[in-house]
Length: 260
Image (cartoon, rainbow, N blue to C red; front, top):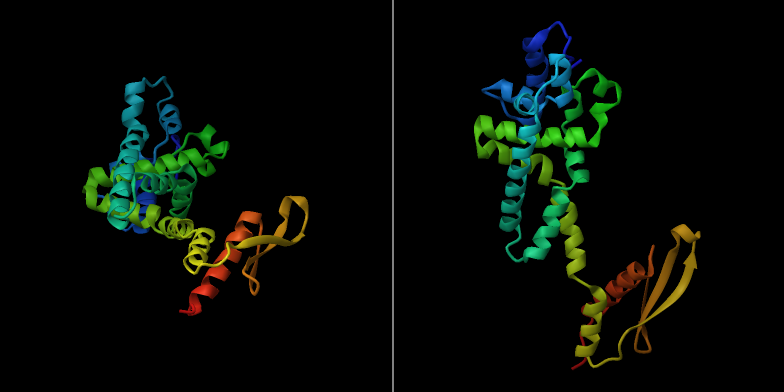
């Protein structure tokens, strides 16, 4: 088993042999000091069972990944903040904070840790192992932060930054960028401004149809401008359907050449 147990007969050398090459290949980084990697993967339960005697908090902090998790959390926050400021110089603090909050959220970090299959490599105590520790969200997200710290301590900021950008920001940024783009262009507002500029009556929104069960309705909304212009769209909420209908109308009117 990759994670091993305190009673394994192959010892630390065997654990290094089984753990390091596979994980190093995954993160495209080779540790000069593999003890740092092993510590990043060592849960406190492993230390307790290995010693078989009470472990004081100071010793536990030095043998498990708890301190590395603390350091990795800070490095992660800094690198993501740095990258967001570089990518989005036009965004204010509020939008940058929302982007960062998503990228450092437990859900997103859990997805990144799963892509690395970090659960496979954890060194857990037998009790934690039997209780499903390798699949526990908290354990594997903590291990990801600890891994970031281990890479930083072994090779400096550049490889740590590469690890974060590859596994934490990639994909996550693409998703939230698209969400932000949709939020920034409010088509209902854009349509209001367009018809106002053309001295036309304001848009009117009408619910044409509702279908589906109460917990999962689909709404069809029609937007009307003047006597002749209409557009319809479906959505799982009235707000969503209205925005989509407004977008259809806005794009249709934008393609027209207004009369002079």
